[in-house]
Amino acid sequence: MKILVTGGAGFIGSHLVRQLMDAGDEAISLDNLSTGLRENLPKEARLEVMDIHDDRVEDLFRREHFDGVVHLAGQTLVSSSIEDPKNDMFQNIDGTVRILECCRKYGVPRVIFSSSAAVYGDVEEKDLPITEDHSAEPLSFYGLTKLTVEKYLALYHRIFGIHYMALRFANVYGERQGDGGEGGVISIFAKRLAEGKDITIFGDGKQTRDFVYAGDIARGIRKALTTENCDTCCNLSTETETSLNDLTATFSTITGTPVTPKYGPAREGDIYRSSLSNRKAKDLLDWKPEVPLEEGLKRTYEYFRK
Ligand SMILES: NC(=O)c1ccc[n+]([C@@H]2O[C@H](COP(=O)([O-])OP(=O)(O)OC[C@H]3O[C@@H](n4cnc5c(N)ncnc54)[C@H](O)[C@@H]3O)[C@@H](O)[C@H]2O)c1
Image (tube, rainbow, N blue to C red; front, side, top):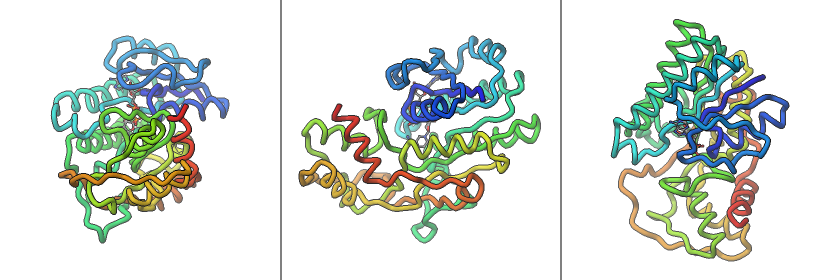
């Protein structure tokens, strides 16, 4: 298969491109390198440095005849979406519709989209782990643009027959994750510990997240590229809650030195517990996460140490 990966030089993109190449597929990355890096990709990987809004994107589609598009490029920060909703809308909605228009014009049969747990908004603890049929009431413009794109995909399928899968990722972590902005808590902790610095937990440390390894996410995306059970949304998650205190304890095991975090005031607006059901992914994609947290943390820590 010949696959276009927008945002291919980013964190998740770089895991996906490696897997596609290893499987013998042709992966072409399109990335403006705003947060992504050329060095994130293997030397032999093909990278087109351009913005998703660039007119040259259409030429690329005309020339290449893609069998599928994995659309990962976009504005990825909840906080930036609150500070500048217009830019969030431009990057995540306008940018995506441009890619979808190219798919329509040049006959791309399938699009896989990186949606997010942010589409769900505030969820009562009794509703954990969250299933895909839970109501979606985003609390940020980021969550809203992800949900809006899901609805565009459903209509592009209905009107133009383009197949799609909107994958709602939980908290993804692994090698090559940026630690700038809000980068995942794991990449921030791993980098600081690798540099011999201390770490701070905001709140009591009992807050939980559903941490899923980027290589597992990439495998889920690859399954979504070929499954017949498409044209829907689907969580990709571990369905396991890990507290930040547990995370710190696992880092102690990995580094071989006790990690004693500092504690700061809880951050306003942070959800306390989070976990997404992965039953639908098991049923539709025959996917389940394979990399245990300790192994994924070890790989992430080693990456930052080097
Ligand atoms: N990391 C997570 O935990 C997580 C969770 C849910 C959803 N997602 C989504 O997954 C996708 C990938 O996220 P990531 O964590 O790999 O982030 P990332 O910042 O590492 O990757 C995004 C990539 O897109 C590129 N990009 C951004 N705007 C672009 C534009 N206008 N034109 C071309 N390229 C552009 C960046 O340079 C970067 O390489 C994003 O859509 C994000 O919203 C990530």
